[in-house]
Image (cartoon, rainbow, N blue to C red; front, side, top):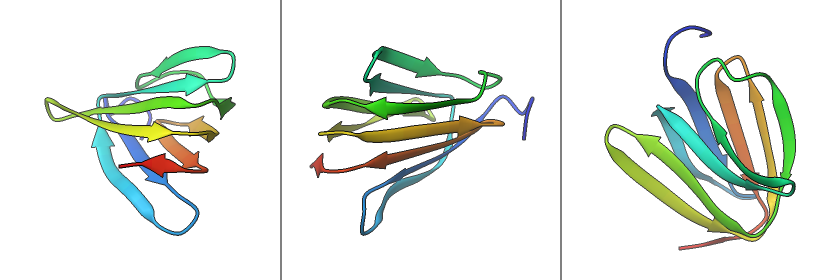
Length: 87
């Protein structure tokens, strides 16, 4: 899917999928500082700290308040695994 201009995103908790779909970008509270991911970004694996994961899709921003987890990004596919999420 490289070069498609979209990201394939999954935000998952230990027991269920919180959100899945295509997005323009994703912002996460990485342990080393906030990180924005866009199509074509280099591959990354990073730990998350407490904060807000933001998925920017179709003119809307979906927000997930998380306590930690990790993010994996490769070839325009983003997986955000969260330890705990607040609704």
